[in-house]
Length: 531
Image (tube, rainbow, N blue to C red; front, side, top):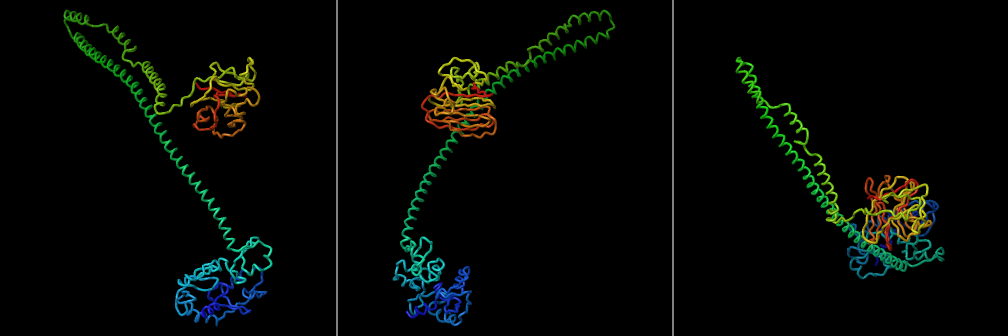
């Protein structure tokens, strides 16, 4: 153990390692140059310098005197006993150059593999790497008293050694041992870890659900895309067939007209050639000197000459009328018939590809519910605001505000309406139960739990239900709207149709009564159900 005692005398009390560039203070205590410089640096602000060993106070920074004798002792003596080629040796292996692998801070001893096995494993015996200054760097050692910090002051948030704990300044504070505090913090950390793991698992489940939803949406989009492609393939196929029919009719008439014209041209070419021979015969008469012969031949020629004037008039009349001309009226009728056939076939093609949504065209407004300031068109498709009231018979179904319901409602299934709207004024379009009140503010569309409305007021768009409003941003004035109702799914959606078609808002509810299209107009506004 003698070497252990020698080692103890040659270790710096600050870093607990062999002196490196040892210096001496005027009080006689030795330290490593770097260690004491770090201490004085921390004491610089207070302008009071204290020896870490004897607590001697210096009014100014002490002069550090290099201890050459101690430096020589460390270099020549201790290096042979405890270090070899820069490697720390075991303190307990006397006479053997056994490498140390750990260092016990409490015992201030270096341990080889064998001595490490029999060394105490209690928490007081803190083991670190043999060449490490981790205890000093981590603050585990009290630099003031050169002791392990085993206590913690909760009030001051500082770690204390036994000497610090015995001072009066912490006597009234809540102080606990590091072992107890570690146990408490371990429980807290475990609870936090449990909560984090639970939250992480929840997030993992949600991510799995969202990935599944993303897959479903991808598959759904792909399915719809395929159906749309097939629909347009069907439409293009029918368009191509109808186009072929119309173009075929044009080609047919063209071929017939050209055939007739070609035949007539051939006939006239023959006539032209015959006339040329007549001309030659007549020109020969001009050189005949015999009068008898001239008269005979003249009679013969004149008898075979046709009525050119009447023949050309008849021919010109036939050419200018219907003969040899395309019947463009027939082509136009054929085109109109083809387009009409295409329009009527599109719903069937849509149904074939699974697109069943069709705009309801049989919805009309109920004049019995229309307020006296609501003017309805003859076809009951348009409602507009009147500044002067129109006398109506007072019936329970009539609204006291300027709004109107439709004559029919929806109790199930999917339905779609298209509505044209004025670009100015104040209007509301939506759906309502037939039991909606007809008088008072609660009768207004959206101001109760029995109606849902899209509101345009002062060029600001919003949705309204149960008197709760939500603004909707629009980029261009509204001119036409689409209303989609899925009664069974509890969805009522509004879409902008003018310009870029886009979704405006969807109400979600459990519908308990039939839903009737409802309309409110005020100012210069009007609304119209598209046929």
